[in-house]
Image (cartoon, rainbow, N blue to C red):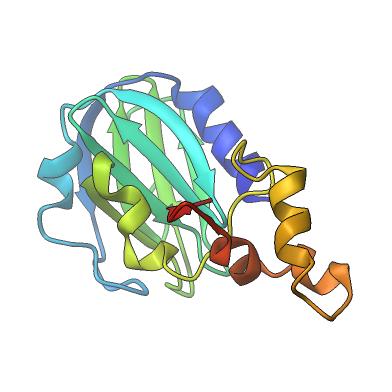
Length: 173
């Protein structure tokens, strides 16, 4: 589901420039930092990726947007620069391609920016498992780690913490 949303945002906005940002409500799961708007305004989008249930948007200014939709959040895409505001539209990102509107009735989502070089060290990723498509997650390494387990494979295959715990030469995979 998050992969689908990420791909939809990428298809809509592409490598657009972030022209402006309006935060209408900072009180989400974690407060949207005061400097969020200035951290991303004027930057161009370089890349979109997913880490677990988070969308990461890398920018050309050395910053990345970390975005989690929560339980009820969604991203609305609007081609025009004016969209009718809805009650739970908390963050509006105006790009050169149109608007990305974060709507979250329950406010369980979050959005903030951090230096791209520090994305992997963010607290929200501390207990998260590795994406199964990560090239560092080889069958040999997975086999090696599973040899030490006495339970069935399936619980480990769906346990993100297990995959995150895999380390090879102190490199998180």
